[in-house]
Image 1 (tube, helix red, strand yellow):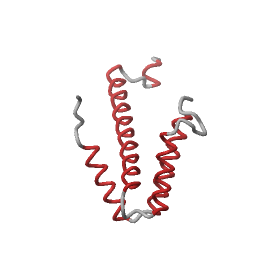
Image 2 (cartoon, helix red, strand yellow; image 1 turned 90 degrees about the horizontal axis):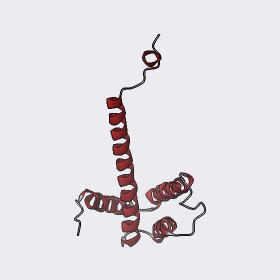
Image 3 (cartoon, one colour; image 1 turned 90 degrees about the vertical axis):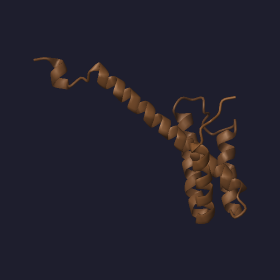
Image 4 (cartoon, one colour; image 1 turned 60 degrees about the vertical axis):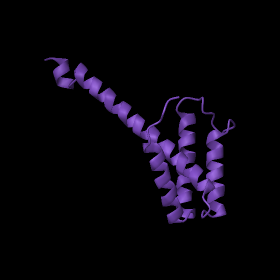
Length: 121
């Protein structure tokens, strides 16, 4: 009996499509993280956001940009997961603290900024 047929090893063409799907998924996830970071920075400057929401946004953005972190980013995988956990926790708190109108406005501006094509200079 042929082991390849029993296990179901994909052909080379299938590997390329899997790799392409993974690259597209990774690209989508990175764009989501950039969008969420933009929402944080926009909410930080929004005049209708309460001070508690601004403090959460400032702490989240500050932690992400700070060279001093609990788990350093240069440690593979764990450092990035640490940043991701801080970003998602900060966004969850902001969704509770910020007014929905201000949050929707910041999300719309972030979506517009992310969908705009970048110009190389």
